[in-house]
Amino acid sequence: MSELLELAERIAGQAAKGEQIEAYASRGEETDVRAYEGEVESLTSAASAGVGVRVIVDGRQGFAYAGSLEEEVIRETLAEARDNAGFATPDEHVGLPGPDGRAPATMDLWDDELVAMPTATKVELALELERRVRSGDRRVRQVASADYGDIAGESAVATSTGISASSRRTICSLSVSAVAGTGSDSHTGVGFSAGRGPADLDSDRAATDATERAVRLLGATKARSGRCVVVFDARVTSTLLAVLSSAFSGEAVTKGRSIFADRIGQEVAVAGVTLVDDPTDRRAFGAASHDAEGLACRRNVLVDGGVLAGFVFDTTSARRSGTASTASAVRGGYSSTPSAGCRALALTPGALDATEILAAVDEGLFVQSITGVHSGVNPVSGDFSVGAEGLLIRGGVLAEPVREVTIASTLPRMFLSVLHIGSDQEWLPGLAAGQTLAIDAMTLSGS
Image (cartoon, rainbow, N blue to C red; front, side, top):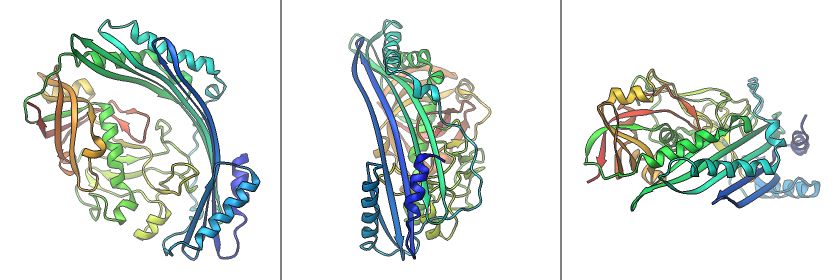
């Protein structure tokens, strides 16, 4: 048993009669290095540790947290949570889960090589990444930034209702931003590589990706307005799914803040669309053996063959909806309480790769990046309007670059207008996988 789990169990074991206690403890270390013009522009290394305590009495929930694992601080935190419970508004649905008999998936999300890697090696990875971009295509005028980052963290949760779980994980990444230009024309491209440990990182890929994305936009102009097929780059698809994820939260549904509310069993997408949240898939950066309340994570089908199949729930939102938790509690760390959310969203891959999708589309717009997502995409109303840049598709291949255009539709219409889902599924940092995605009849506003 880990030291953190012993601590969490000790706190949870102090529950008085009629009282439920949850203790969530975590600690971690992270490093960030930024290289610029051959020098280290910044280097930060930080460690954090803390505990969050929930106390529930007669439907009243009190919460308190502290950024320390010292015994005296923990005692004060527990006392504060108890005190806060006395002032809370009663809610019959609030409560802690008990064991549900589900066995957790066996997953190793930890890389010892990352933990043992010297800081000097991390610095050199950032510097080398910048050198690779600078020594490549002559049209790259500047490397705006080249970064290395990592995190190694562990957590544990225990409750007076019998929950006891712990986990640990590592993640590291390289990212670089290249600025290409000719004359007064300049464009930025970003490339990255990420994984559980240093052996997963590919600096060549990150450098090449950033350069190609910047260079291929040189000479971009506004496209003609109209309606067309839009093909989203894998990264863009990942971003869209991440934003859309809140619409599948049981908490959002119970509050009427989802476009999918009251639509279980209805057709919400074309038959080829199956969307799953599966934290037990080790490839996902949001993979986990247990959710933030300590229940064993599981595969949850949200859209099955175009039909809305379900939502994700934590314990409280599930009780409010008259159903069971899907082990989908998430939290921002020890300083927050859990809520329902997705961890590892992915569309079931189709039969065509990116090149084959372009050929099948023949004419349209390939979007390699979008802006204004959080203001332009509304998972409550379904509105979709974002800025975009990319390349026209002509004759089934990429043609002239375009910039300063807007693409618009509604999320329900987009789901019902999916033409192709790429076979090129790639897990990206964040909570959703990416893959090429073609959608018919979107509105393009340009010149």
